[in-house]
Length: 356
Image 1 (cartoon, rainbow, N blue to C red):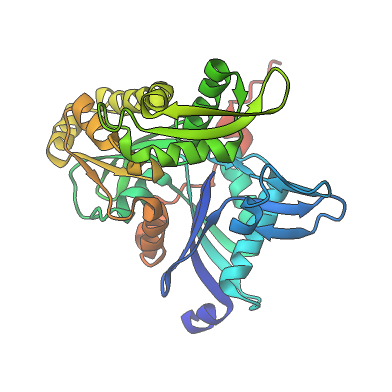
Image 2: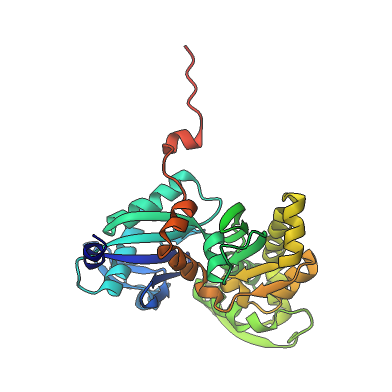
């Protein structure tokens, strides 16, 4: 039965992120790492391109093309576009083979049952026979090398594109988990808001992201303060092109509210934990994963504010996909870790009250 299953199905671990989508297979590792973008023909609904090719058109798409970023804040914002994007990515990985798939997908810790159902439905529409959803915090910890046999509690902060997931993990299971909207996209938006208010200029999504990446290595206090970057945008008063210089200090100041919210979220998880868990975390420290782990000064800031040792994962960008991949090959652990679908969505949201 296992032989037949391997012939007709593929096991795939998926990190369906707001910025990037990663797909992992047990035999080949990470086989896809592409921007979560899809370009669709406006009148026929045909998928023209996905990933990096579609990202090139973002902000400058032709009039008969719609470019979508269907994942927003860690959840599906446009179901139809997300389903088409996911199907195209899976076809790229599996080729022309008409295999059905068993998928393990990481979802934010604070995702609602309705949001979880939308992820399941999109995966099933992309020809998945079985879909298991797992908390992103657990996946990130496993991808960073956390041992399932370690009974001590570990604090994991996964700073992604749409959400920051703060989770406490022990014995290969989730003790507590919460997701914040303060993440990579919020940083880009903070830069755009700063440029708009201080320079009276509108900046595009891609330009703001480029500013963040350019200054990512000099966000430590006092480092590279005099470094400058020339940016081009659209002047608010007359709509013409405008060029301004922005400094590292300005970018650091623009990002401070977002960084402070991430620190506050991690602090809240520690404050709400039980004494034994807090004692464990003092010994084990904090594991930092996700694209935000690459921001210069982020690990130092968390270590200073929380008084915990902070370790950055070896491959922070792929940690969630790698962790989900570990669960793919450990069916017993996956059964325990998977988010259950037993309770109807309407019942999970609110209790039905009937007045006779």
